[in-house]
Image 1 (tube, rainbow, N blue to C red):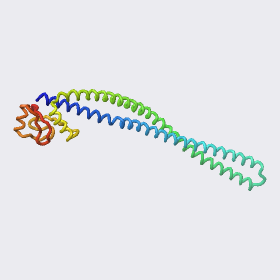
Image 2: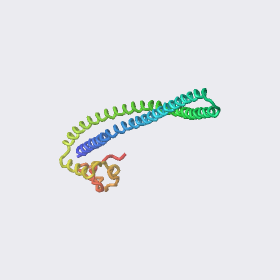
Image 3: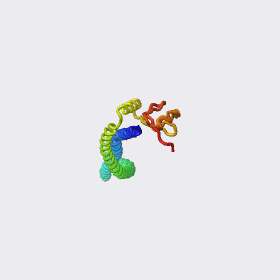
Length: 237
């Protein structure tokens, strides 16, 4: 009987490892997606900053064009000054020149502001690109590791399937049936648990003294009266 208990414990260990591996494999796709998502978010951040710098550069070029137009306008007014015939017209042209220069002054102030903003944005982009390289390489390495582990896990699952079939064949059919019934009633829980110091390690409840004494003989399957699991004796520490 002790051999049968040991075989059931071994079968349970195989099934527990199988469940753990399958659970880990179920997470593989999500983990890979999360890594790709992290990289994608960083790419989008860089793209957003690049759109900002492109908009700033476009606006800066527009300001440059406006400044050039105003300079050309000022040159034309200056040419007119040389041919004016009265003071009133002369003063009017000087006012136009002053207005044009005022507009250019405002535009140039904005251009300086835009240059500062472009410098800041370009610094952000450069920093983000450096960070992106590190994130991309780290994600790539982690993905390779996850895939390698998944391949190893798949291989281990195949081994466990073979071990399970082999070990199941060593169990008395009536014991195996009872074991499977308990597993079906409580999926994910242990069906075979030790009793140590008269305490069931499945439900942590003390078992009756008579049953505890019977466990020493190990002459038949015995069950915890509280949780109904198969129990077996192990020596107190």
